[in-house]
Image 1 (tube, one colour):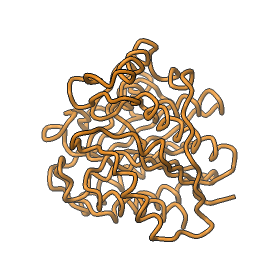
Image 2 (cartoon, rainbow, N blue to C red):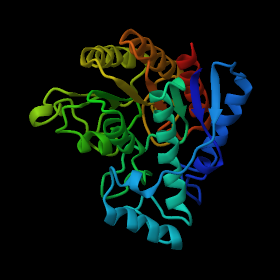
Image 3 (cartoon, rainbow, N blue to C red):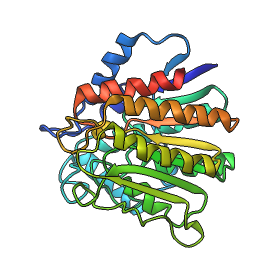
Image 4 (cartoon, one colour):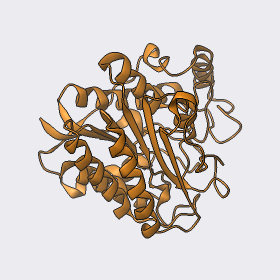
Length: 313
């Protein structure tokens, strides 16, 4: 059994937007080049993504919205939201491949074929059940949570997000769900899209106290990350999850063109390492890491490969 499964390949590389959009199709190649240069040993295995079926996507998304994406995918015209997420020919297929890659990784972990996994073009945390948002068409995280619960009977799933942007598509989908524990470190919503994730948002109803938002100010550095991370890690450990999903967006690193934080790639390596240690301590070892955002190519290559390295240690 490989320690870490990395799901990567052309079908998810095609998930990217044209004409100078920050989320371009070259992001996968930036990761892949450094992945190859690091020459990981046999503890890391690579698998090609396979597209999700429509019935899998419908575990999280509404039929009306899925049909809308199919229609825009055929023409490549217009936008899928209010302007951040343009349609392109084949956007449905590319988005389904992202979901499929995440599901392949999650199922491999549950089947014991890998202890942990990483998918570079994944973690599309802004997409809601019925609409696209913030460069995110289908929410592969939400689909994976539904698969883990329905196919494997899990009742305690942790979602940890260190992307600069608040993971609103996941947070609000599960805000009242006591089975999903969320710890989200992000730039304060008063200075960055989507403007959500205040510290007092901690879950509703039966899920009160199962969510932890940790907004940090613009310019926050690794010392600020370490302080927030200690709180997040303690919160997740107390939840005793059966499966941990890490969205490790690299747009929280200094020098990203559309955000304002000052972390270094070391923060991402620490996150992967500490969650792997925690998962082992909990007795299952299950960590699925997803690339998320990140629009400085050198940053994402360094951060994501640090995560792979930390999961393989």
